Length: 97
Image (cartoon, rainbow, N blue to C red; front, side):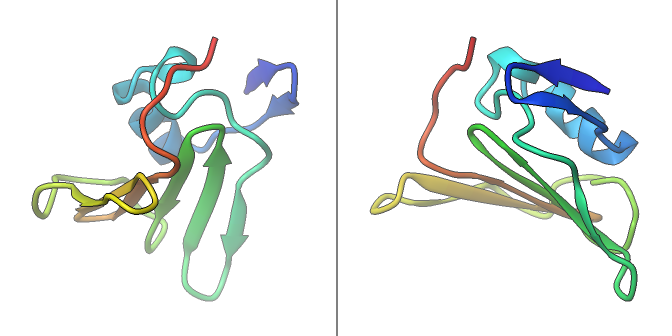
């Protein structure tokens, strides 16, 4: 459970591990903006953060990177594929107190 000015939100283990590795609330992702959303048919779930989105595919943890992050200079977004999901950081890099 993570508490911020936006509220208190559950953060699933696979999402939490990624969030911790990216600096928690003081990293590029910032605080969660809401609860995770799940697709029971696929096992995928997504959680939005102040600075990006974490998507876990197939209901598993992120695993190892499948390659280097790819950037979109026009939007400031970048994405990195992992064995068990994708991390997308939107709007460039920033810190969220």
